[in-house]
Image 1 (cartoon, rainbow, N blue to C red):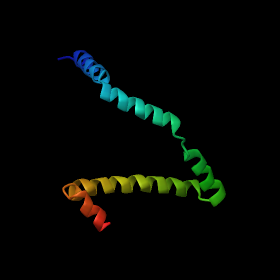
Image 2: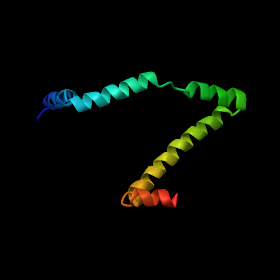
Image 3: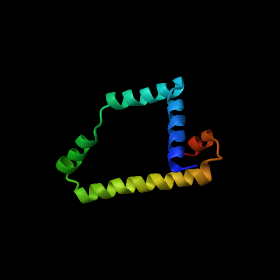
Image 4: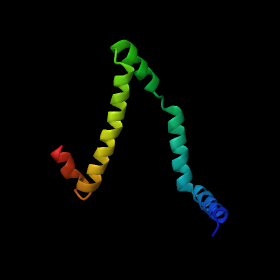
Length: 93
């Protein structure tokens, strides 16, 4: 199968999935919540840099450290806590 044929087949499969009622409802929900929900990232950035006085370098370090710890937490959950029941994790926390 050529790349062009594979592309057409995948496009057809995606289009078929989008025609399903459940998939369309989820996509519309995500679209409307993304439009309606306000974003405070710009306000938070200016508050942290101007009002509190955190340097841009420190703010960048904080953002990178948040992503790294999220990645590490996901890996730990996947290898250690995936088989554990949720109520025991909540109890231990």
